[in-house]
Length: 80
Image 1 (cartoon, rainbow, N blue to C red):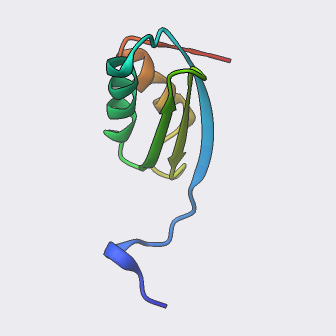
Image 2 (cartoon, helix red, strand yellow):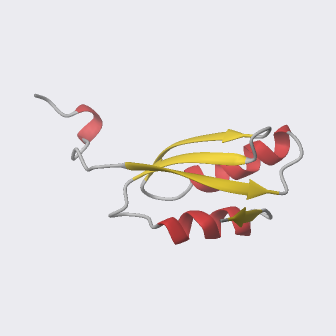
Image 3 (cartoon, helix red, strand yellow):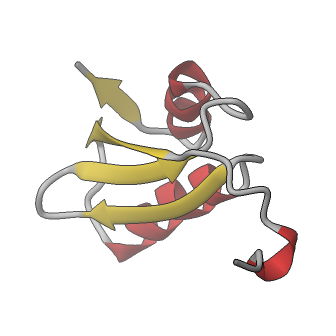
C-alpha cells in the first residue's frame, strides 16, 4: 500500500468543541482558519447554527488545549 502525499499514516482523532460568540459567516471562517493553521490539524468543520467545531487532528502534534487556545485567540469562547 502506498502513502499519499508523504503521509506517515499517523492516527488522527476527532473532537467537537462548543464555541460561543460566533454570529455570522465571518466568525465561522475565523474559527476555521485559526484551527487549520495549527500543525497536526487535518480537517475542520464549523457549524454556526450548532455553535460547534468538529476538528480532526493528530494528537501527537497538537493537543486539545492547543485547539481551545486557537479558538480563544481568534476571539471566541470554548465551553465545556
